[in-house]
Length: 150
Length: 150
Length: 150
Image (cartoon, rainbow over all chains, first blue to last red; front, top):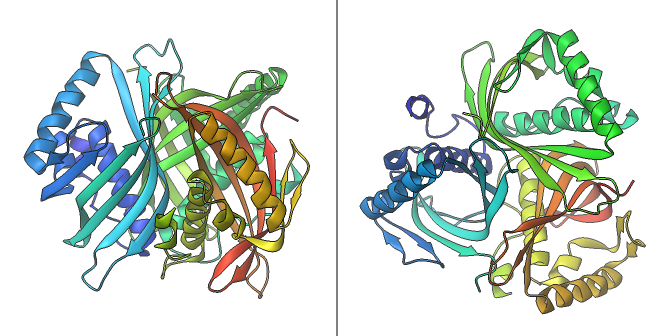
């Protein structure tokens, strides 16, 4: 999507917490709008996306491939997906700028034609390790636990 | 609602991002609590509220009239409506304080008696142009795209 | 939960608004993860938790007892509960650091096995009075109004 390129990675000012809020807003918009490669690029080259309901995705190549497959399926199904993150906690780890976060996330799905109301498809709890990069962050490790599965 | 008047437009301190979060929280509370004129006053005099599912509302007078009609309907139906905005991105545009934002928004409806659970009535993606006004902002242009309609 | 202890009460930097966002994120995670005593300790010793659908809980002892009962029920039912707070407004009251807040909150429930989608069990509007404590805050008074009940 062309709109993705128009926005800087992070707001030019503000405290750590709000910059990370903006990081997540952009990151998940990229995925939800189908910009799969840009989404994968918000992870480190060897970043891990680990969900308790599937085998962990290791590295940008795998993350992009799996995400593209999922996006294609969602498009084929005529669904708009929106990831909401909230209840964010930010915990700086060290002098190198590494940050640990915790948050809740839900996934919403709306079907084309909006005959049925939007529905919550997943409620999750997540923890990230973020590393600094070019004034912003990259996800080095993400662990997502889906409610109702443990 | 008398409570609406008791709160300043923005928090007296803090970075741009969080001040805009507070702006939106107040703005949508005004609408959800039926303070239609105060809600309309968060737009510029000639502000545009453009949704892809209806003709654009142009100016405070039209915004207030359409919103009052909707609020009356919701009250008649015995519904409490709550607009949640999230996944906010803030992008300052220039030295005059103009700010562009992007965000997700959902509308929740709860029926009187709470016999059925609250339901999500709409999931949307929105972009605003905000202009500075008296230490806060006004919406000059809002574009809301409803999921499932395009 | 051991994870609860690893996180400081508030982020070490940043403006008032984001520090309160982090306060609420931690507070509700404690409850949602069953750390009932730590949740109760986010209220003042004589703090009041007042919901319009039940008798007010007065003091940490009562808050902890009632919350433990509810947590036990939820665990017995095989449900994961998540409280989301949003649309936060922060309004500093005085030079002593007292802060009034308003926000929306929803409660999500996900059943074990995830056979049915997560559902919103309550939509509410809340107002808190927070008092400063050891660099963070405690809730002195919380009033929650459930949509659909008034």
